[in-house]
Image (cartoon, rainbow, N blue to C red; front, side, top):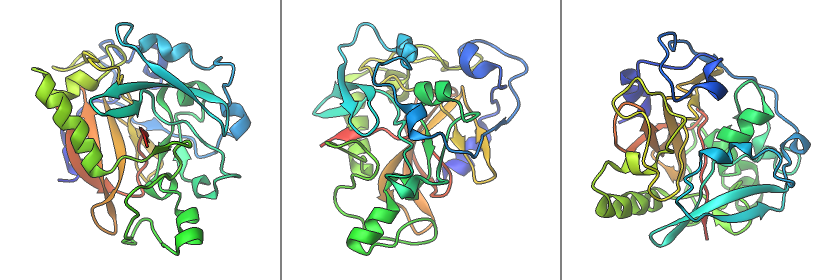
Amino acid sequence: MKFGIQKMALSFVCTAALIFTACDSDSSSANNVLSSGDEEISSSSNETGSNSGKANWAYLNQDVFYGEFTDDRDGQVYKTTAIGFQNWMAENLNYADSLTTPSLKGRSWCYENSADSCAKYGRLYTWAAVIDSVSLYNDNNLDCGYGKACTMPDTVYGICPEGWHLPTRAEWYALYNFVDYEQNIGVGMALKAKSGWTSYSVAPTGKDAYGFSALPAGFRQNDGMLYFVCSATVFLSSSEYDSSDVYIRFLDSYNENFNNAWDHKNFAYSVRCLQN
């Protein structure tokens, strides 16, 4: 089932004023759609080698031991977390250098084109951006993207930092199955951050049992609008469903699940990389 159909059940989104200040508080006015800026932030404005842009780490689970690594491409520091036999980024990817990686040009966004928003929620990417479609074409003669079916390599490194790759649909399933086996709560509840989610719903915040610390970054449709910040998040896989759609996983404030679905390649979603 497409997430585009599933999202009909998500009846709330946040106002712009809520994105940084009150995503985990009630709001009767949370019924607007957020506009997303189309201009790209230069790579220099995303550099946080001094960790100055990571005040948002306060939402992480203090009871979990996190690893840490630096993306040598732009100096950004990311937390990591081990879940079963996998080692995941504990934050969404926030890489935007379209000079070094031309696939990113015009294919990634964050709210209001704000560096603070990028630092907290990461960027939202189309599938062509994430798989680094330009590089795939230049190196392997693979013409991939929206409307084009493509036989992908077994491991797609895409725009992930060195030593990391994009999770396949099967690898997302492995995460789901491990958490589902260990926990007596919904997998979505086990993976959501303890704060940052809307609280007017039945499953507003998570237990963050493993430090996956998922935040509700929303997603961007090709109408240029950013939907469901504060109440949903969607993660990309490297696995195609068909020429127009890609397999995704999504969390929302309205249930405790970690749902498997597929949706349009030219929408923009969050990215979590998996260590090789």
